[in-house]
Image 1 (cartoon, rainbow, N blue to C red):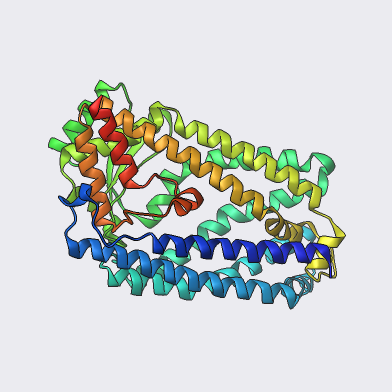
Image 2: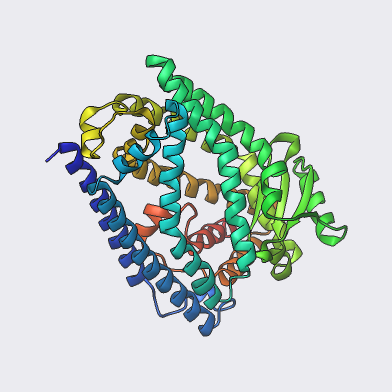
Amino acid sequence: MNPWLLFILAVIIVHYLLDTIISLLNVKALSPDLPDEFTDTFDQDAYRQSQLYTREQSGFALIENSVTTLITVVFLLAGGFNVIDIFVRDFGFGTIATGVCYAICILMLSFTAGLPFNIYQTFVIEARYDFNRTTPGTFVMDILKGIAVSVVLGVPIFAAVLWFFEHTGSYGWLLCWIGVVAFGFVVQFLAPVLIMPLFNKFTPLEEGSLRDKIMSYATRERFTISGIFTMDGSKRSTKLNAFFTGFGKFRKIVFFDTLLEKVEDDEIVAVLAHEMGHFKKKHIWKMMAAQILQTGLMFYVLSLFLNNPGLFDAFGMEHISIYAGLFFFAFIYSPVSTLLSILFNLLSRKHEYEADRYAAETTGEPETLIRSLKKLSLANLSNLTPHPAMVLYSYSHPPVLARIDALRNLSDR
């Protein structure tokens, strides 16, 4: 058997087993006893609901992962990638247009395979726990808008990557790296203005006590905000969230309307202070720098495997092409991607602790931030006792109890 095929199948199976084992460990770690820290926030019924939610999410993810893994293996072994390649080549387009068609076909097949799971997740599981507010119309429109945005943004960048690798020889990976990074910066500026308003309505926060407190805190910390907005998050879910968007003098703070309904003004300021901490500690730029380096590494390694005949034989391909090689490389790069994801999450969790500390020190009220974390956990039915392996593997934020402990230690100093 082709050694590349053996390697790829091993990667798929090991990744599946790793996901499964960690998910089972996480479910097993669920404790029937409500942590003492949360007795003032959760009642027994709410805590039981949070555990049921975690169990159901984990079980459903296991089913989805099993089905998609099986489909992937069967599609690979049955020569599905080659069938799609022959299909798009019959159109008689040039290599770049053919590559774009190939990518669209593969991605649409992947989307179709995942759509039933997305529907069940949204309209059954999320609805069962009173999270879902998405109507069928909104669901369909989100899909159509998402496809439109993907075509407008994705097709040009994919075509450019193909062109660079085809026409610039050994420098292709470097030019792709530079081009993708530059494109990413442009999208960062366009997203708040052109893309995000396609999906949600953004309304300036009305004058009042909350706005005054936010502006007072921002002024005290010499932090420029170009606008404070609420977003109709309740259009899709009852979950709470807040985020910053934009850079420099174009920074905006966005609160989900659900957050404003369930969290007090001082607690919202504490959430804002946490997000501001990410900017003040330069976490955004550090993560972007790390992601830029990771993208460069990916393109360089990609250039080493792009036209490997053995790799194409493993996928049963009759023709070697750059566009198909991009998809095949994803299978090879998967172990590296997983390891880098773990490292990125480790860095992200460190940043969350630092942002919490910044918020506690600049507001002088760590208990206010603790109250907001508790309310967020209750509203989102967060798992209060995740297994350490799950935290290491997939958590970009520390478990809420660990964050509260760190804030309490600040208070005790």
